[in-house]
Length: 271
Image: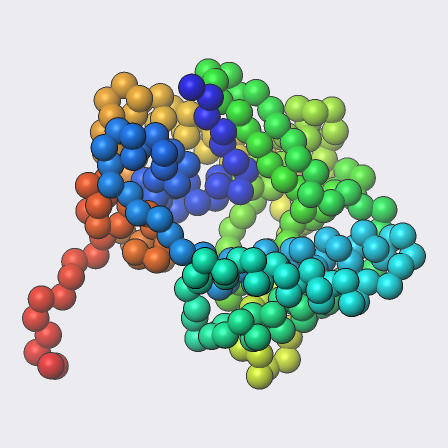
């Protein structure tokens, strides 16, 4: 059985290994009798995907010397419509489809306008590497400019994603490309009535990011191999203090795979 470990999943493993395992091995765990549930797309993820699509389209058109604004808007709109067609979890920052579209378009434009030097780039390159023991590391890199990788992140809060970028660097090295810079372009998602903040640029040390990625990869492999021997959910540590420990974001929440969530309120004297 071959198992694919995605670079984008590496930061989540540190947050809650059991939740990460529920997503990584969903089909296998269900086959083993665990009752996991499907998750709806969050509107934050939908806006993020649309922002990526708009940026990538605009960068490719710009380096061809073509106008990109109309195409950016159309691609972002189509992405939102596709992401939400089977249901979506709305939130206070993005309560409607129209607002989601406007946010994605302005977020994408903010990046394209703030980084005029992003020309001659490679977009969404896919890399794979053999990790041994029937494990594969894979990743799609948002933007590569020579020996530099730039990843686009959106959302209400900026998070630590250096393990993902270290994974990308390892993948490139395994495929004959040496990476010397790892950068994150973070675009805050805020209410549409407020001006869009400028993107923030964060750079990570390549060696540190690679070491972190490698350590997490080895832990993932070890845990999965252990699980396949004992079939126990307790192979993975649960983190009920994770901000993602909710039924909206964890397929294992309140299931026979994990019941470590915060307790339900049975009595509240205020009511």
